[in-house]
Amino acid sequence: AQKITQTQPGMFVQEKEAVTLDCTYDTSDQSYGLFWYKQPSSGEMIFLIYQGSYDEQNATEGRYSLNFQKARKSANLVISASQLGDSAMYFCAMREGMNSGYSTLTFGKGTMLLVSP
Amino acid sequence: SQTIHQWPATLVQPVGSPLSLECTVEGTSNPNLYWYRQAAGRGLQLLFYSVGIGQISSEVPQNLSASRPQDRQFILSSKKLLLSDSGFYLCAWSPAHSSTDTQYFGPGTRLTVL
Image (cartoon, rainbow over all chains, first blue to last red; front, side, top):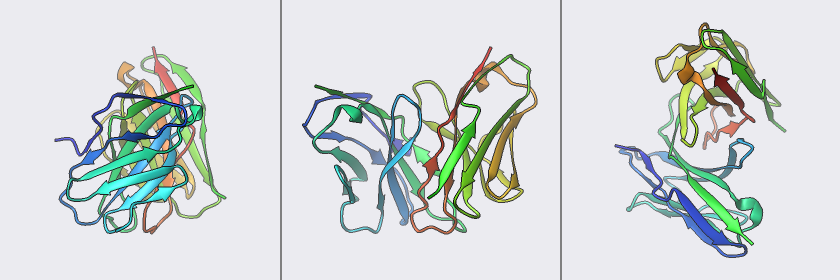
């Protein structure tokens, strides 16, 4: 079974509108972390936002917020006031547990977001 | 501030040739280091990770190997490349003993094996 599922291969949004990118995850760990990364056409993976499993508040970073619903095991990314520069591939990732100060990430297959003027 | 470098940026190699990709991190000590591969239009696959000099863990058996000869240097190698080794290779680092263990990625190397 996939640990990270991103069901939207592609999303379209108009400039200045908000968009939600879906992510569901599967884990039996109590301690885990969820990440969103942006990958523009240049290829570099850019860290956007982090949510810990014990965090009670949804994470926010500027125009990015993470809609964390623990019972549903979902961690959707919300981008407010979309900009043309937001056009990119977006990946959801999960860290399960922590082993001696390091951990590995499992990535979803990504969602391509296109922002139109 | 911390920066991560990868080179070369692009590489075209014939099947059966050797490979060496290099990754270095600046501005931090004893980072955790990671090598990922991304096939065209796909997510990332973790290949190797390292928590210290000479300590390498492999996630996927293959004809690739990794080494960490210095604290902030991580090298991905192969003795004989296969066509299936083509892809985008990303190096990442995370702070040792961080509460979030956020990974930060380098610019990547695009490898084409012909």
